[in-house]
Length: 544
Ligand code: GLN
Image 1 (cartoon, protein in one colour):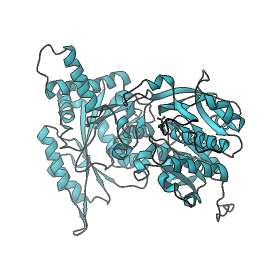
Image 2: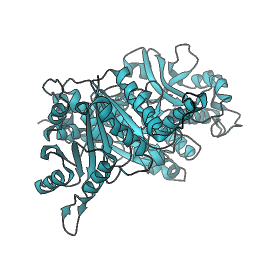
Image 3: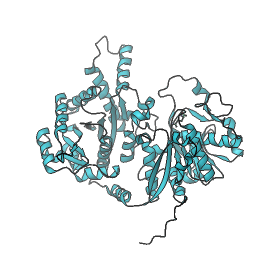
Image 4: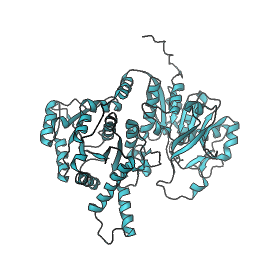
């Protein structure tokens, strides 16, 4: 039977609860314990797929095609597992399921209530993941902070679990923030005390409190939290802000969290081996020469909207011993005259995924710039649409080629809906989602980068390359370097007469891991790092 660790958050959101949960997974896995993870999101949306990236950051897509919270990306990267739809549960899913059962008559005339019907539905999701994953430990993160109205049923469900599976099989971890007061120059514990009180009011006594803080936490503060919140002294775990998120597992391990979990849950384990992780962090912290990559998108004000892209770039940079210096370029800022200067120092340009017409012409300009100046370009999903539109406009000498997402009546719909997509009216969950095979074409840049002939990559889009334009663009130098095995869908395209202009219809960023960077990102950075921009000097040969 699986054991459960429930993680709640206190005081404020955005203190890095997701990274903490992911890191807990890392330190358990380092003891050869099998782990699976689940995120409970209290909002009423069925999934984050229909939410604006400004509200929610990136939508992370699992291999089985679920549109999920970006924390799942961190879980996958830190624990190196491929999760499924079972790992993200929202209030919207729970209520829809309960109401569907009520309509079917499953409750035999009973009054449907939050307790027990909603809480039972929630607990069934825990069990389903436990059964399917067969993991020894299931870590469950409750989104939001304790005290949120929407979060109550989830907290009640995790409270009940202590009786359901026995108190030796559950552990409650609370992640809080210790704010720093400048006037008195001290870290305050009172908000933590209040949020633990709130948890206790619901009937949950935390076993472990992880304290986030921007400053080192003095012994005195730890003692106070132990006393007032009634947790063991060694179960107050400090987690100060660090320069790289990948350091968090090492800090938690050093503070004894791994051993504490093992003891409290009586797990049978091996000695922890975090050597690979230690090596990763020391390489990340070592100074490297930077490579300037411009990320051209319309959500750049909120960096979390491109979380996996940023991480995938960082992984590939590390592979080449380079730091990625990301230049965040708002695509609308590229639309004005003379705005090309924003790309002057870019050694590579990346246009990531997105929806809607806003900023599209700026992205097309970025693609023109990359093509004319022979700057490496990586297009991800929408970035591929942009590359195809740009190339078609160039060879036809017209501004009319477009995607029907942006101009439904264009005479040159180079990107279009598949006929079967045209019938669909609902927005949620109706795209091409999750893993699809892609056959690589021998001799292409993409095939060389992968070093394989068949790959599976994650998708999230409605529109596709329009095959009516295949031969026209091919004659002008576009190479279709990856196709669906039946040859019907263009999955990858590149320009023959360009050092590296490659785009994919899928999202390779979701599959990148810190120790296993994605081949397309690796190849892109490998070429970009040697591009010399005006005023830049080639690096001097370095001998230690
Ligand atoms: N908006 C485009 C589509 O729906 C691209 C989506 C994306 O970039 N994820 O096909």
